[in-house]
Picture 1: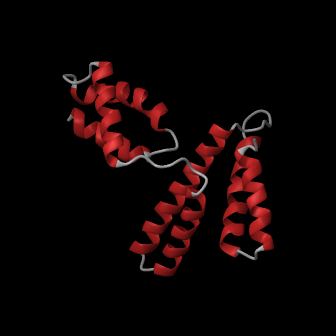
Picture 2: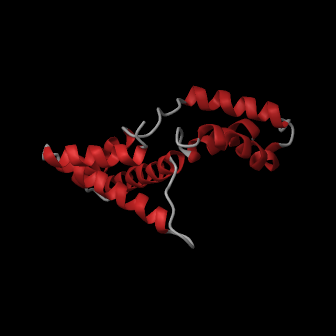
Amino acid sequence: MATLKEQLRTDLTTAIKARDTLSSSTLRMVLTSITNAEVAGKEARELSDEEVVGVLSSEAKRRREAAVAFDEGGRAESAEKERAEAGVIAHYLPEQLTADEIQQLVTAAVEQTGAAGEGMRAMGKVMGVVQPQVKGRADGGAVAAEVRRQLG
């Protein structure tokens, strides 16, 4: 089975041949980010698929935040481009969790850690249990908001 990085490279080649400028430019940027992550630190290494998903998640988040900033600045065309790039990246991410699924995971984590009566002091405990379960499948801000809601 091909790794996610190999799949990205194959899809980049396909996008270039099809003259799909949006996909090819987005995939180039993503592959550059992956390469940067591989050479960061003391020695170069190959990223696992899970680590590649982490890079893709941060790239998608960067696009969403940029789209919001462009909207607030009155630059709708640039915002649309960012959203389109986020859509290309989303194709390679695991299916995102719904708000109900996040709520269920947080509720289970609160019960598991016994944090129900501790209030906001237990946020770190609960987030520590929930984060590995939602990694790459949900925005950290949405998860944190749900934890705050249930603990607060």
